Image (tube, rainbow, N blue to C red; front, side):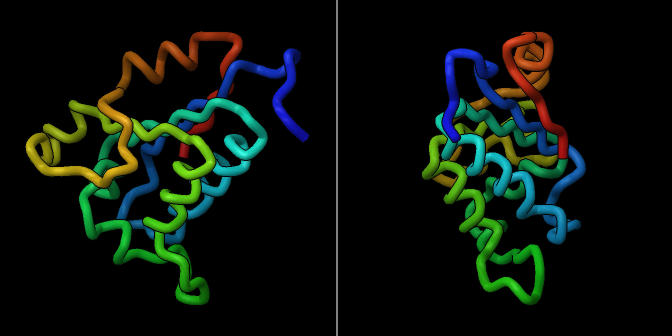
Length: 131
């Protein structure tokens, strides 16, 4: 199955309740992102609230969604990015968590927050998911 002329323009994913404190919730958003991107859908992932900590080098690499899965959360993030998902860090969330000047993982495409995500949510040609 691939994206067609009758499909929505893309999928925007907001990470709000998924963060390093709940690693069991961290694989699913990236599975969904990778699946949509593999179907040639444009995918944007917005990291907000405490999820911005996942973008700090070393954090996601130290987490696993399950003790039965050897793949790290960073590997899930990298899979989504490798399929074409674009990752955006919320500037306000970075500031709120004292991470404004902290280097972020290479997969981050840039900054994007409430305005960018809401523009996607209000665009009837886009679909949105919140995790």
